[in-house]
Image (cartoon, rainbow, N blue to C red):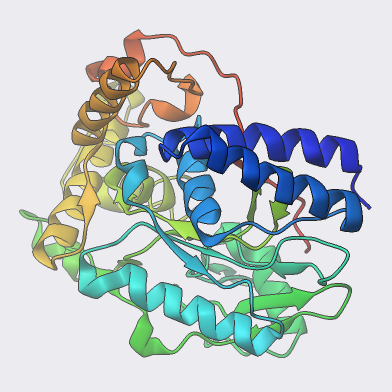
Length: 362
């Protein structure tokens, strides 16, 4: 059981911040704290109100040192799923999250929060790194699909899922309660929005039939609010173009499309000094941004995202708050020196509420 004293300290720190930022008077804050203090003393646990849940999730986004998109932290939609008690109920809520966040392509920032770890509720875990992701298969003839998904795909296959073994198979969602074996659920295809990729100049790129999914819903991190740990707390914003064009599709350990992009663009790849990789990387990112825009799916380029982060910094300064950050994550993987972030230093101190990594289960 969690230490009552430590839980009470973290709960008090959160309540003071939450009620101050929601502009509640001190009497309301004190009365709420007394309720929580009594509940912790009697049960070793306490329950957030819906308002506290919403404030906590938003503050966690504001405190996320690795996120460049924090300018929009106040717009987060919080879905309360704490009443879900079975794998099937959790799956239905996750499907609702996908539908709600996708919003026909106009992506909404959303988080779904399931019951936190407590003596009264088995721990809910979502095994997926993201709710929507492509499978990866190690075969005698090489890798099919996403190399980064091989271990998770093997776990799904072990549990009975059958993938068609193409480069873009949508993985099922794995959900477990407590120590029980995880159950897998295929995501209805009607919920999944994918973007066919094409280049604004090179028609041959579209012939490759590459694609990517619309919504990046991170699902393996935990959210800590006021001493309570929500181990199932999937959340999403919208993609920054470089996440797809400079990492998922370009990394040698992922889809490794730079050589193909270079060939399509007619680049000289005989020497590294021709900068063919740099030029292919830009063209691949142009293709991704062009495709998402053409199909009406929300995506931000890294220059706009950096400008939005600068607005976030100014707004936080006006509120008297220091912007913390992990510089190595905030700079984009394409042309970082062209952004204001590259030329600054940030305190990487971690404030709570916040999102944290947890051990993978496979």
